[in-house]
Figure (cartoon, rainbow, N blue to C red):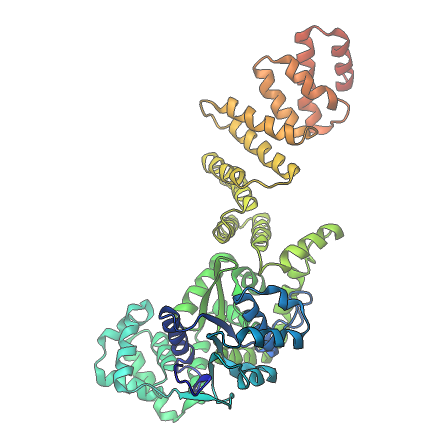
Length: 526
């Protein structure tokens, strides 16, 4: 990457050798040493395996567009992303010229847009690229770094490093010659060794697996696919289901997408992901935009899983229909509501509203633990999400009967309360009612304060007026009760009427207003 005669450092090798790990290490070292003024990182996108068929989920973009957009975002010129593709390319080339920047492009073998290859072959002077792929794709001013299998010392070091994992703790029982035997069976490919050891669960089982594998005489990609097939066949159904959903996406996905596509309960999904991550099948990425973890699979495993999925009758279509129906909000009956919910769900990659929607679905079907976990995840993703605090407070209040925790959450919701007057009024109304019934020493005074604020924001909310009138009635403030309830006496009905009008009747009786008392009695049918 420091060679002045080259523009592209190209890491090449079969799957599972650690190309991405090595290149990422090099990029981080370059960043820490200030070798470049900026680093743009992106993963080449395999459009064949994107979520095509999930109508309206997200607009499709090519790898080339993704690369250009990533440069614009990193260099803080988002306005160039709106132009035509040719104009955008010219603008990016001008930005990169003599910039002392680095482009890190991972998994270049998945590219189906040759323009990104052409772009890397004709990089402007003054910018470098770091590329990984299974074969040499960039041809000009390139320094190829061919990554081969590990040597004996590396194999022993790598395998012994796995003993810290719960599924590989038995590694401490191996002698060096036994570890090298495992390396020989796996062509010294680190990913194949990891899969064999995590699948075997014991030293004796691993050594038996070694002999069986060596007898087959497989090498390279064929061996890696065979190794994964053996792991895949021993997976429980929940783990397979999660992998099937992930095989439809080339980019890391948040947990709500996996939850919908797999139709698992949240604890089941979390258990499956935990196992798959430890076994090096699923890779976890932190998404800064979401402030949360997203999940993906390696390209080689995705290809295998997807090929298995399409063999399995209508299994792929079943998953896609689940995702399509969810993102199109087809479970929402009201057409106007469906438009709103569809907009929220399809922006799941940009905000946390989908988590709230999933939490409400879990609550409706009685899965309260999942609802609580999803709401906590929404808060973790966005600590200023007042809706998540309010929903979690209501869950604690009505389902778990934890008023103290509900009060704490309402306080958090109020600290991040919305600008919309009606929404804020509802928030303070429920907070006030909860305070009123909390049994705290100053509960009535605190409740009155919140309800008065709610009333000021929305003076025609019957529930707020009734709750506040009840407090004034306890204090004997008849004039306040009359002032609140009189404007609404002919508008209320149902339970609100049954609660509000008796309060107004009592206030008029205390005030000695005979005509008004008769009028309210007539409204009550007395």
